[in-house]
Image 1: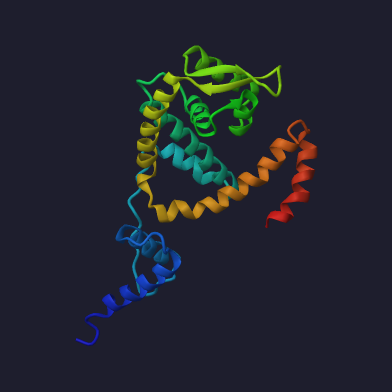
Image 2: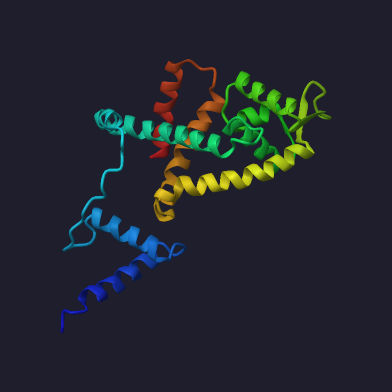
Length: 233
């Protein structure tokens, strides 16, 4: 009888540790995910972990990724995730007058800040000038955006949502939220939230180079990275 409830006692101790580590994610699903992570990291002794069944249905892709070094694989995963998101978003927007994630993002951005210059949209979303201008032209042509004179710069135009653009954005926001929930359903919030600080650090570092040294040749950019990277470790 003495050892009958040892496992339950251990679970209570684990829950206490979990509460301290993840105060905002206190539910059984996230707790179970956290326990599995502790087992993988060997933070919990006397356990046997059975790996999840391989779900990947394209062995050639697995072979390709496994041959990459850690850094290359990290980059490739980020690029692949972006392509997956674009793939899903196109499906969720199928019967709306939006042809891409970028068209949605332009509408969403203006919906948030009320108005924007064309170059603002292009810079915020890191797209090539011609791609951004073509996207804006399509949105204006489809009467989702309207151009107004910029009172501060007579050479520029200000973009605002049209009434129809606002209505389409509301519908698209709902679809995008559904797509996001579906996309992240394969992983617990406790897991993906842990990656935000790492991704943010990478984004901040390269945003500085992108916006301030866009026209520099690769040799100068390489030297610049060598001098800056020590500040981010």
